[in-house]
Length: 187
Image (tube, rainbow, N blue to C red; front, side, top):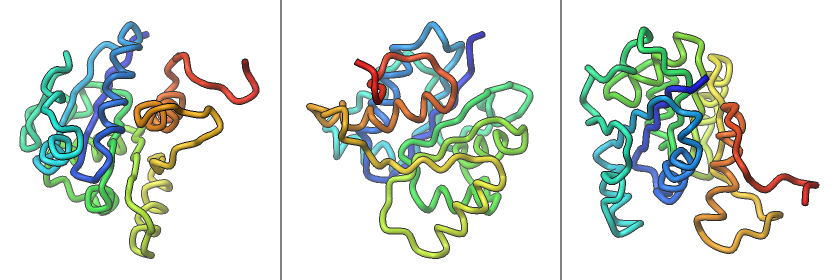
């Protein structure tokens, strides 16, 4: 059964993770019915600064403005099963934890949580203060998955993209996608 996905991209540093996530979603497109892509205005600026382009516009996904509350996944009736926020800023995470739906990313996250679907917040900042840790606890209790963008090195990644994929692939694994990736103990 194909899945409907929301990919929210915030203005946290780490646009490479969002790009690798979008590229991976293309690689497993036979498992996906729809991808709704939302970038905050800060995310667009950070992407352009860090990656030097506007390639987020080139993906064959439905691209929604951050203030478009008419996007299908702003309602639970659209049945989007999974939402990734990648990278997820601490500000966005905190607004989601407090139920503040001031843009499409936070509204979609609120919908995913209320419908008891899967929300994976791929947080980038470090270190954490107590308020952030308490918000992570609150979100975990509400059913979200906190997935820090902490790459692994045992696969010996040879590029920034391969390094970012060590986390992106774990998030896609958590969402139940079948993908070819490095597996510990397998040749």
